[in-house]
Image (cartoon, rainbow, N blue to C red; front, side, top):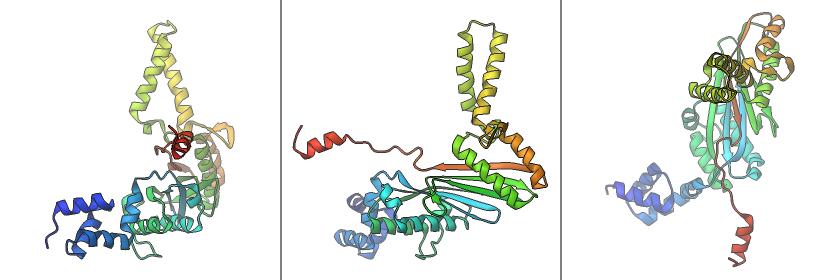
Length: 308
């Protein structure tokens, strides 16, 4: 029989499964709603997708590198307990390795074949949800590569090989000594982990952010009652200070605060044996930007006890 859109919608509302999965289930069962629900449950799809509404803000950051490229992925779970699970750690590590064969986008990584399961990464994660019993998701991923040079990596608070709560990639273009480039790049990656710069250069900062800062600085300067020409110079000075705080190359290098990252790189070129340039960086901190569910524990206890 023909599977109508309303049937798919009805099944989706009953199970929480995805539209394509619902359509497939109805097709496989000849449009029988109850049989389709059982089909989804048998496949573990209904169970997995019903959990998709729960906040997954824990998990792990995974990093993998190969040659002149490296990737970083964030795979979320609901609890840190699951993040410490060896099966989950293996899943994240494998996803990072799979990401190396893609362009690094979430879409490409999700669609890529997971070597252990033979299924797509998206389906493998969904199977893991059904098995482990928590909502999980590949939230984001990124890749950096260079034509000649290295992509250094760093995992902060590493819990297992290539896995932790914060991961950084730093791409460096240079024909110099690769081992020395990697060592310096790792130091820069540690710096990025500590300082969380907004951008590599001042030109890469969102213009809206710069304008907002200028407006604040202007108001502060005008409050001093100084003439406009002096105010303009005050704003320029404060904007310069702002760049020193948020632009990677202008920041004081945490390894040697007497130098900026830019100057430290220039000095390190003597060891590299060739000019070098930091071309990009990526910093993933676990759960950043996720709105976590909060609850009043005392209220929950009172409710459980039948109190108001």
